Amino acid sequence: MTNLVVDCVRLDAGSVDHIEVNGQCGLDEPGVPGALVADGVVHLEAVVRAAGGSFVADGRVLGVWTAECRRCLEEVRGPLEASLHEVFEWEPTEGETWPIDDQRIDLAPAAREAAVLALPLAPLCSEDCAGPVPDRFPTGPAAASGGV
Ligand SMILES: [Zn+2]
Image (tube, rainbow, N blue to C red):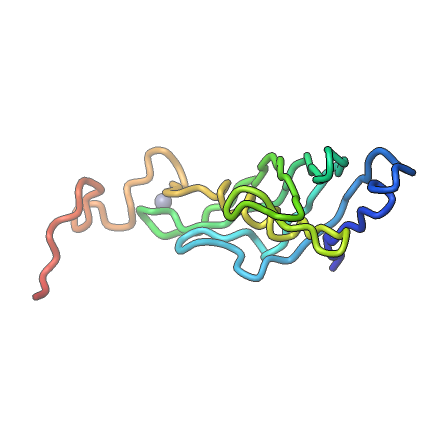
């Protein structure tokens, strides 16, 4: 598994004007309840440039998602593709930009975030999926379940 840490020393020194990144990364937490990145792996294609003391990564994240059909719970798969545009700064803004650590930047957390945001929220195996037992479990609003 390639790690996605990019050494930006050459960018800072001006000896190159961009660094291409093309690698895979495993995700520690590959998804959200009900939807996952298949195999927990995404592919990242990106270009990193220096921008006035910070670094900017532009590219895309590619993979496959798997999820449960929200009606029949069969597995559904589809292509995962998300664009990535991230800024790395020495003093990052929480939730907006990412840290630079000793002139290195780690694209993996940004790739993970982009991938997870691209997961489908409520996938269906097909538009007209009726669920496994349409009579008992109609797909309209959920009936109040028993309980307290
Ligand atoms: Zn279904």
